[in-house]
Amino acid sequence: MVEPGLDRHEWQTEWEALEPEVEDAPAETLSALDDLVARMLAARGYALDDEVAVEGEERDVVAEYRAAHAVTQLVERDETPDPGDVAAAVNGYRAIYEYLIDEIGP
Image (cartoon, rainbow, N blue to C red; front, top):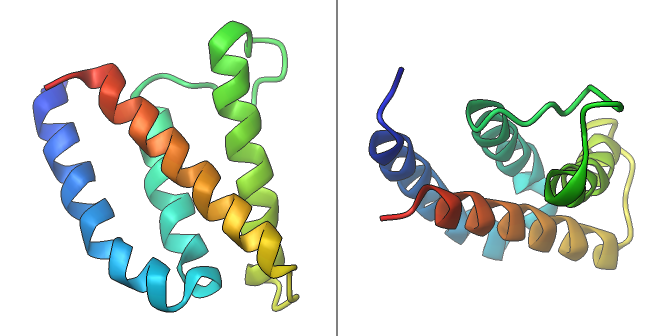
């Protein structure tokens, strides 16, 4: 098992590297944000594909991820999502990231 502190450090480093890209090209950065957040969720034991297992606060986190992921999939299919949807997806990924980082603690 990997130390939570190591995960936290790696995730923070990766997120910080993506921040300038998010500012310059948010839609093009969605796939990288999605990948990072999905790995974080999996490492923290979130069942993204299990409709039955998702309950309580975990349900909100997974719902937020799925909404952002849907916008990411549009971009990956070379469709053009509404800029407001892209912003909502970025904000969703950011909220999940911050929640998971806080969950781990210092």
